[in-house]
Amino acid sequence: MTVELPRVKPNVIWYQMTKVTERTKNGIAAARAKGRRPLDMRKLEAAIKRIEAKTSPAEAARQLGLGRSTIYTNNLLYV
Image (tube, rainbow, N blue to C red):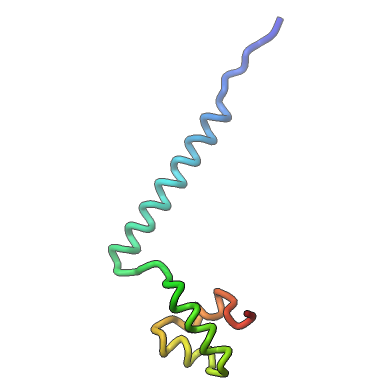
């Protein structure tokens, strides 16, 4: 005699994935509403070039309108 167990786990996983997706979308929308934009990769590339040309990371960040922590967070000093 076999007993069928309810398929609860896949439903719970699906529900959790749906909630994560929803929260991510809401977070992005809230950031845009505050005026925040995604990081511009061209600015990061320009920062790398300036740092390689012996400009200090703080100065490169200031010139490009980036935060100094962005330079360190994205490991631009170790390129």
